[in-house]
Amino acid sequence: AVPTEVDSYHSLFPLEPLPPPNRIQKSSNFGYITSCYKAVNSKDDLPYCLRRIHALVFAYDFHAGGETVMSRHFNDPNADAYFTKRKWGQHDGPLPRQHAGLLPESLIWAYIVQLSSALRTIHTAGLACRVMDPTKILITGKTRLRVNCVGVFDVLTFDNSQNNNPLALMAQYQQADLISLGKVVLALACNSLAGIQRENLQKAMELVTINYSSDLKNLILYLLTDQNRMRSVNDIMPMIGARFYTQLDAAQMRNDVIEEDLAKEVQNGRLFRLLAKLGTINERPEFQKDPTWSETGDRYLLKLFRDHLFHQVTEAGAPWIDLSHIISCLNKLDAGVPEKISLISRDEKSVLVVTYSDLKRCFENTFQELMAAANKNERGSS
Image (cartoon, rainbow, N blue to C red; front, side, top):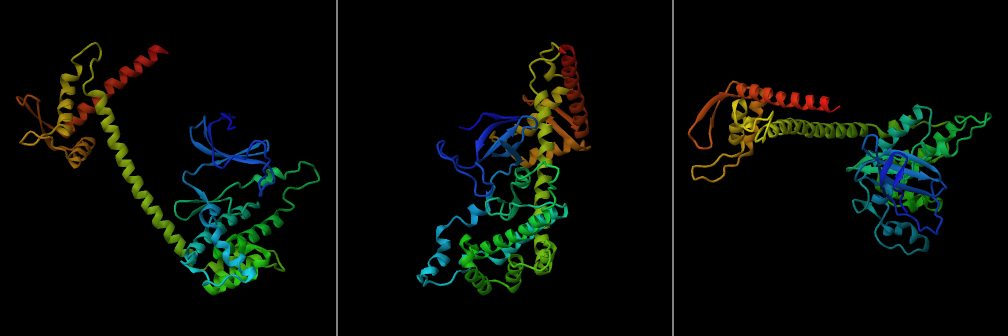
C-alpha cells in the first residue's frame, strides 16, 4: 500500500508499478527492493520524486511529463529482431537505417553532449555517476536529458570503517562510467538494448559503421575498448567537434524562447495585479461603516473606469468586447500617462474627463486606504 506520509512528504503517488505484496522484486540496478513516488514537501509545497530503497528514501527534483530513455527508445520488442533473428539466420529483411528503424545521428549527438557534460561535472568534483543506464536517464521536453538516482550507490556501498577510504575506488568507478556511457550510446545507435550484449557487439558495430559517421563509431570504440591509460571524459571532445556548437546554438535558441514566454507572463502578472486591486475596490458593500464608500469620491471614478474597461456597448446596444482595448487602458493606468479619458455615468447624464495619471493617483490612494485598514485589523486581532 502507498504510505500516506513519509517524513515531511505527503500526497504520495507511485511513479512506477508497485510489485505484488507477496512477491519480492529487487531492482536490477541496485539489488534492493525499490519503489518510486511523486510527493509534495510540506515545507515548500513543491513536488519531489522519492526513491525508496530498503529503509532509505532519496529525494530528487520532480519533472512533470518526464520519461526514461528506456521507455522512449527501447520499448519496442520488434527493435531487437535484427539481433535475435540474425542468430538463427532468419533475418532476411532490409538493414535498419536512419529514420527507418534507427535514430537520427543528430539526436544521438545531442544526447552524447548532455551525458558527457553531466559526467564531466561529476568527475571534476572527484565523484562518480554509477547510474549511467537507460532506466535512470530522464528525458524532459524533446531532447533534454537528466541523470536520475545519482549518489544512491555511494550511500548503499558506504563503509564507515576507518580502514576504508570511500574515494579509493573513485577512479575505477569513473572508468566504469565511461564504459556505461559507451553502452548507452551504442544501444541508441542500434535502437536496441540487444546490441550491447557481448555476443552482438560485432554486428552492432557493423550496423553503426554502415549508418553513422566515423566520429560516432570511434567514440563508441574508445569508450568500450580497454585502454593502456586512465581515460577522461574530456578525451571524447575532439570526436564531438563542431557538433558541440550545434547543441549550444539549440540551447541558446531554446533559452530565447523561454525568456520571451517569461516576459509575457511577467506582463500578464502585472495586469492581473491591477485587476485584483481594482476588484477589491469596486462594488465594496461597506467600508468603515459607510455603505456608499465605493460609490463616492475617488472610488466613483474607479467604478466608471471599470465600466469603461468591461461594459462598453455598440451604437446598437450590443456588448463591445475588445481585449486590446482592455490591455491598452490597463497599461496606461499602470504608467499614469497624461492622456485624457472620458468616463460616462451609467445613466449617461454625467461625463467626467480625467487623465490616467489622476486615475492612477485615485487608484493607489484608495488601495492603500484598504490595506491600512486591513493591517490595522490584523494588529488589533493579534
